[in-house]
Amino acid sequence: MKNSTTLFILSFLLMIIAPSFGQLSEAEIFQTVQDNIEQFRKGDVVIHVTDGNGNSLKKASISIDQVGHDFMFGALLFDLTRDQLDPERETMLKERFLELFNYGIFPFYWSGYEYRPGHPRYDRMHATLDWCIENGITRKGHPLAWTHEAGMPDWILEMSLEDSETMLESRIMENVAGFEEIQIWDVVNEPVNTVTWEMAHADKEGRHRYTTEVPLEDVADWVEKAYKAAHRADPSKQLVLNEFKQIADPATRERFYKLVTELLDRGTPINGLGLQAHEPRDEWYDPVDVWNTIELYTEFGLPLHITEFSPQSKGAGITGDYRTGSWTEETQAEFTEMMYRLWFGHPSVASINWWGFSDANAWLPGCGITDKDLNPKPVYNTLKKLIREEWTTKGLELETGRKGSASFRGFYGTYYVEVASEGSVKSSTLELEKGKENVWEIVVGR
Image 1 (cartoon, rainbow, N blue to C red):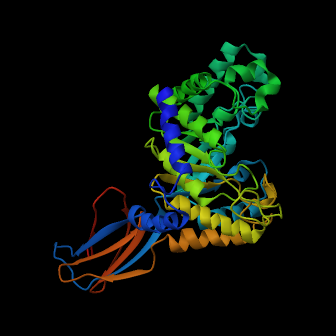
Image 2 (image 1 turned 90 degrees about the horizontal axis):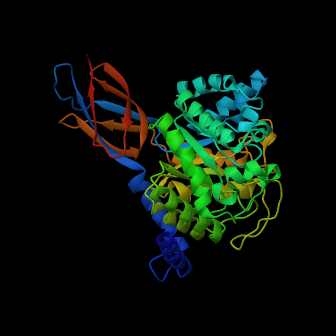
Image 3 (image 1 turned 135 degrees about the vertical axis):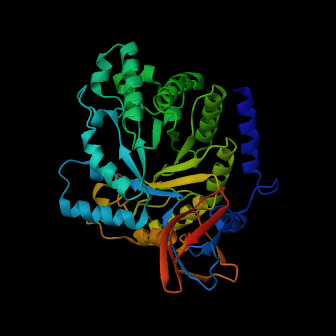
């Protein structure tokens, strides 16, 4: 722990005295963002077209459109797992979701998921999981362990501590192993700002007590057990540690940094770090703080997931030192564009998740990307412009040269490719994959 404290202090001092010791200014950050998007979010493809006899075809016409992203842009799917969702609304919600996103989050809050012991509501998940698979949506479950009243049903407190810990381990393993369709899990939620499992079990009212006074060794003890149980259940699953307030609060940033260091030193199987981005709830973050926080956690070499982001739009005053004014639909969209550019422009960030979807079930006033009737708000259109237009490679028209080859550079993901030559047409769905030499061999006329 002493080494991690020293490393954090050095990193934090560099953040404070930037840019004189190599830290970037705001202008430099946004230039880096643009450069990084081109360098890290895109790759080169060579297309080689031949006929059925292996002869290269020159002057073959190639049409290229990206139909899927490698990067995970997501939102909550909680509404689709509710009972008695109106069919018309369900159809509209799915259409709106697919216009933007390829990543969906499922609710596994223990108190709601298994409000009676032995009666988990797993049946509510499967129809939506099937829909996700049919539409190429990556699936994540949230959360498996949380010392909040939503994560600790009343009936678990009636057991002994030992039995409750056994039940928690069983719950974790049952869900990770049982839901083969779910690829990513937030295993433990908000551990550095809450009490340990033992403390919450001993004090019913303590289940919703936010505190940073618990020794990190004690926090690490119960968190480590949860991740090792999840890993035993299925080593192939991505296991994320989710926390809030890292961007705005230096003390939380240090505490989270120390906890991650301790857990990794213990060999805890954590595959990603989750950064929430809506605390304080009214603050407009300084982009330099956002960037430097990401840079700090990049030291661990783990993918970073922006797990919870939901700026509001109903007139509350903007707080923080960077921007004044109020949270309207217009400022919500402006702030969102700034944040998505920062995150997508950093190579360590693997996903961005909007915490909610419509204003109908918004946890903050107007924090949806649609209104209560699922009509797009300005922020929806902003996201569509970024994700589906600026960050999507589409409408390319190429022609092969005399050696039957053509090339392009595009965003990583899935592509629909159509090749026409001498009256024959061949269509293919192909992957532009990061870290690979992407050579697409397409045979026409066979």
